[in-house]
Picture (cartoon, rainbow, N blue to C red):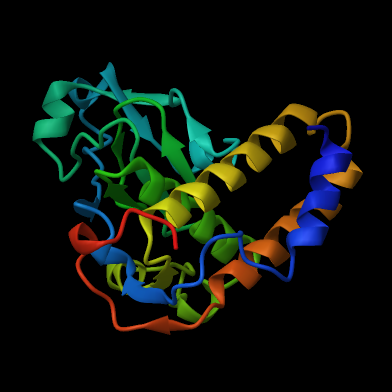
Length: 235
């Protein structure tokens, strides 16, 4: 499907739910949806033995300049640097979200990395929930939802507690999570494919994409239940 056709599909779907799903969504806080989370740490910059190793070290410039995915980083640290700091290996497939500088900017890791304390890192055991959360957090960033949570001072920033307690409504049925996550993943792939050639239409399209995401998010929701008790079949 081309960009124009997909845009029209979004417009037609903007006020409806994907067919076959009617169960109310459930509300969670972000920390309930991943299996491990935490910020990183920075080795002492004065110790040369801590740097120029083989471990990618995610910085703000990496995520600011990314297209939503991290394949490598500008800086690297050594095993010594890792062991002598609060940094840890964030595995491939995780989400890293900037809490300082480019607040709210996020990316999916295509490789194992370490990060500074400027990032909150989330490890998932379900790729569809990961992709759904990624889309929801992209929307939060694009629509400025983090602004009311930012602490002001010398530098505006988020903290780990505010990230962990960010509220997300999630479909009750696993099939619906999968359908939504994969739909927006294909949308973003198409945007990336045409970004250079169609910068102006792309911006208009992103707004429509966000509008659809907003409508999907604002469904009736009820008391949550453990993720492992979800019904895996559509109604």
